[in-house]
Image (tube, rainbow, N blue to C red; front, side, top):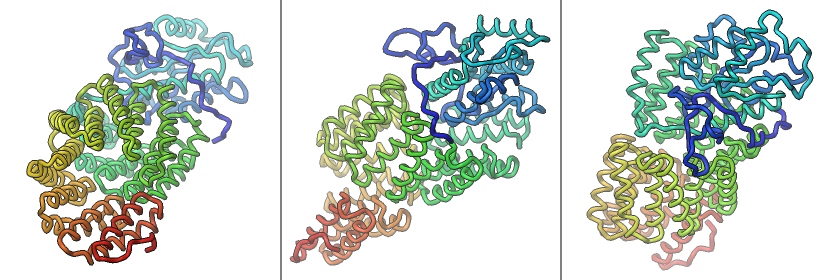
Length: 631
């Protein structure tokens, strides 16, 4: 794509049908999603689904494809839709389908209304309204800023009919009037970006599953088991299971849907590629990062071949693959890939586009993992400032960046700043999402973690307990978020000296995690390490040593020898070995890990420095000389 397409200014506003009212600027007034005071009551239309990318149907009459010469209204609309990263469905390019067939599976209808009458445009507009579909409507103004022939303004056969349609739209429907293709492009772009920033999540994860089950049966009955509509609903059902933490169910549905999509639509169809990308994400969420990477690699290669290297969907898969590499501990490759995606998104979408900022946020997280804190903090602050300016303090993306910045401050020991940011993020999450939203539960647990890191157990433990109880009530005892909260609370009990309670809670968490996620899932491995540390703290060094020895071997096989979690387990094992008199074995282990860390992470990485200090401690126990940093 050309690089002369800057991100459009943020002051453009356009009204949208079926918008959900939100409060803007703290005023107790009803606004639409674009910050304008609402001139209409929003109905209960289904609206665009959260989580995008969306299927956006573009409806227009053919004269808008030719005027003005050198860059038409239709081309401007197409660019705006593609720039945001949504899938474009052009009504004029499927002449054999009826409008009601085209609208199946569509999330947003964009109608361009000029001066020539098109029965399919009016019919599609009416059908979208009847089905509750989100509609973005643009009327071409009579006073254009671009040259147009007289025939552009006149439909000799249907002048009165088209004027009646325009009058109806301008009198009864929320719309925007545009005077040039650039005006249309900026307004449509901003409409889609701002509409994307307002999503309504279900009160409880999994609450949409019964309705989707019913919808799936209806789609199979009405359109057949192999229809695109049925496949789309199956993909949505898998998404719902994944958001509810039911990863095994989600993966099974994704796999079946992908196989059928490849058979029915073909391996290169956008829906097939989207399902494959979703499957890779589910593998990663389930702890199978190696499998996720393989699927991401195939999807990325296909999207480069089919869509091109700079298409938003291609960049989205590349960004996701960088996340899989990060999960595997391949931080150098992940950081390099994040930088590539961020540069491409900056070039194609602009530096302040939501996707560009999302990659910058992900890159900052990877930089924290390798100890590049200064650059990470700079990136987080920039992303937070831009999101505050464009989305406001209460958007989901702003709250997420605030929490991530707080975590980075924890990494550098800035406990006070971290706690302040976590408190702000939690307050915003409660206010906007509600006290029982999964993001609110996670942020409450994160704030407890900040108090824990600062040594303030009297504040941390009650908050951990509150987060755990709420998580059990909302998500269920087996949800991964609940298990994390339970493990964190056990750690606080251990640090408070209540080791009996801590060990019992760790054992319970480990058993559930092994059953639900699997023994080799990264979360299960972390819990087992914490359990072994609790055994050691209670004086049961032999039990801790035996558990850690088996755990280190398993984690190296699953995660790789240089994964950060492997080093954490190794630290615990070296300490247990030294405590049981096996100092030579401890020295051999720490020497091997120190060499690996210097080679993979570098001599200045915090893990390498920590290993060097640990190596010196073991050497001192043996009566030897301290290390000077040479392997």
